[in-house]
Length: 436
Image 1 (tube, helix red, strand yellow):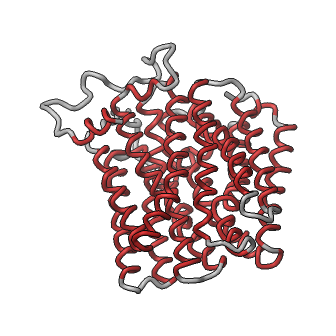
Image 2 (cartoon, one colour):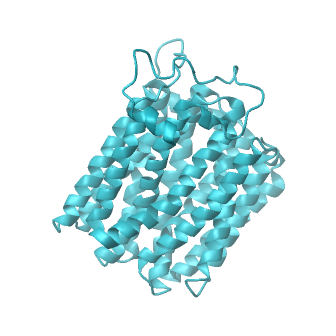
Image 3 (cartoon, helix red, strand yellow):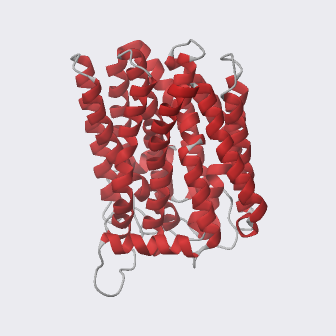
């Protein structure tokens, strides 16, 4: 981390920062490396350090918006669903284009532009709250803008990892990124809650803006390997996206993997990441901000399992590990919806985190290892669409169902749907189980 900070704030010399140590290509990577060897690469260290700041802000985003809606404006779970939907709706329209841009344009400039955009949104939201003008309507606008900046940046961020590290280092790099993400799940909501309790809701948004500003320093010296420009006339974004979609559909294992990601995106993911916050308030009678320690415990579980994956390095039968992790996560979520006390949620969230580390590392590793680099940005755009764009749709649907059957039953029902589907694909889909 010290090296990364030194590299990031350095003014540089007469040559490019990493001229003597270019990022390895898959063809030139050594046969054997340490699973954590990616941190020896200055460019990966810079990207990883920036990812820590970004992930903390990103994972705190849904929490702080929901917290302010539920406890600041004293609104209900339905209005929380509107805000979360507004955060995610830009992904439906932007991430596929962003994936194509990641394969065409300068990735570093895209990251800087989207991060600056997020900073401006957070500053604007903080000013609205401080001036008592933060109505639900203004928050929806802010959420759409915040969702737009993250939707463009995420496919770019994901596509850079295999471009910077070699194939033998890929799963170690993905695990390190997962550690950054899981650490942010621990720190993000907790830090925002602490800052918000001390300085108010506007202070929480100022904290996110300052954090992302600090993260920009690590992008100053980031060097991206030059890509090979495609031969022939340039095609439309739509044609480029269709090519990536065909790649996924043509591969039966990837097709099943993306199907399971879509199922989780509208069931388990919104139930755990969004609806549980309303569950804590409405059915357990606590402040919605009390969901922050639950997310921290889940993040600890994620960090532990991600560390295990990093130490093991490249693992066989990753597809089977991914499906088993999804089964465990769905089971934990099903039980969460039937809990009657706040303390009962802690071991379930920890178990969810342990399974989640394998779930995240395996699905990202499988997709990136089985996708050609020229298609990486667009395929990761599809991945982001499912992971980010489907969650608010699921949250909105779960919110409507919760008004009829109750929040706890809705959480359990969503988990049951996911569990049935993943068990069925595990039994019938040998190709995905053997995918590595």
